[in-house]
Image 1 (cartoon, rainbow, N blue to C red):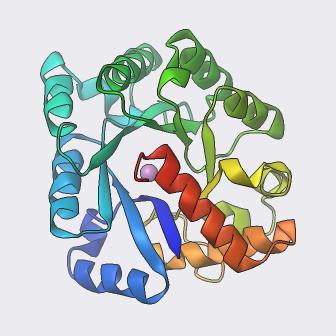
Image 2: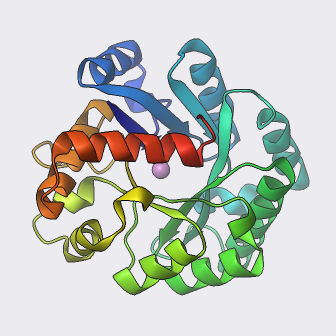
Length: 255
Ligand code: NI
């Protein structure tokens, strides 16, 4: 059993074979998927997808790329969507200084507002951090995000930063890059982290793991991420799958 803790199967890259993709996931032991929104439209679609599939759950939120377009009405709509029974987290939210598609100050504001909303709704958060490690930690601390906890998704920070996130009560999720040859940082984290705080994900359709690198990613491929981590840790695949599955259920309140 595997839980893909971060997928975007609402993406238009799946418009012609979405049902096949979900079926292939199940055939490969990926029984549960968290489908993650990144803007209003994707969040609405995420809820709809989760409504139609028992083991697909939804997160709703605004990605830092889209922070610039956020108004009070946007967050009202996220609040409304979040009341749906299949919505188990808010996100993805956070900071992205790599592409900087929204001004930094606006990214900060929208990240903070969503953390406050998550605390109000008592939902964990899905955090996106790209090249913004220290500011991400600072905002999580300042906003008291440990009250709800959550997941640092597709984690790309150092082990020192990972330790700070773990101390705040967050879980760390690793994606395709851990299978890449030169991925020193995620591989170090895979080896050092307490297995009880680790999750696996695809972030599909992006970042396909080896041996599918460069192709469209899909939830079935989370098995390659889990296999690589098990190899790095010298754990059995079955144990790693079982524990990360239960970790994901726990942080999402699915027990
Ligand atoms: Ni994502």
